[in-house]
Image (cartoon, rainbow, N blue to C red; front, side, top):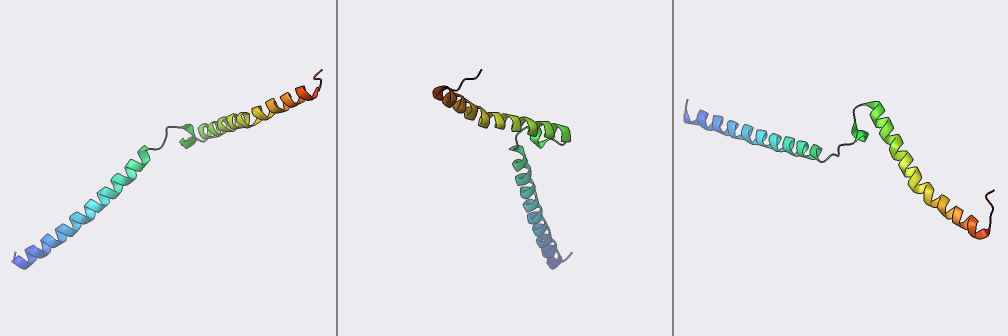
Length: 85
């Protein structure tokens, strides 16, 4: 092999190495991003698990919103003098 061919082969190998290093760093970035996802049934692959997780969140959110409103209405009705008989 001549010196020119060796230089071309070295340049080609160097560019391939840089390309592979860029690909590896991109893959490492993508895999490290997946680690931060929480372990929850909302991200499950199974439909029923996801459905019941959404239902549970809906019920809890409804209670968080509705209970203070009902408590406030109950207090208002008591102060006004409404009879609950």
